[in-house]
Image (cartoon, rainbow, N blue to C red; front, side, top):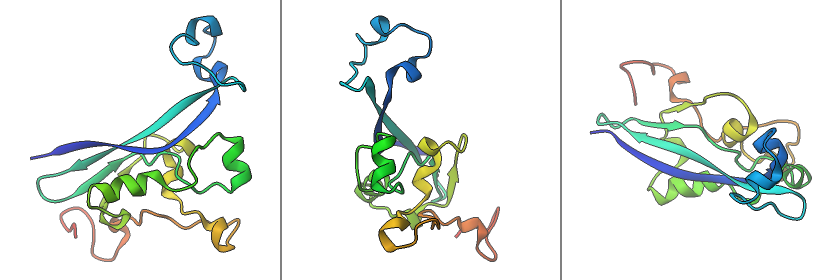
Length: 146
């Protein structure tokens, strides 16, 4: 049996006008109140798929927590920690338990959760992945899931 679980990732605040396009503020502000900087709160949710054969598939990874503090502020990322990793832990999983990650596209709010916060460890400019792809391991691939 396949199960689907919605997982919370990091949240952010972005300019409401940019999020709602050419809809006037008077129209969207009643649905989602902007703050003093005209930013609206946005949640990044990921979907965990548990297959009957034991595979675990993660759809999207959210923003993550890879931004240095100055950039985190610029992009309105609300949490300093990696919320998705905490959400996985609440499901009894770690990032290493994920077999496949599927991304719809590579914008930072969908794929940023792949990255570890290397700036904390003096590795600015280099990024390490939080989610190693098991398919890249020797001998792994279709029919050989570990």
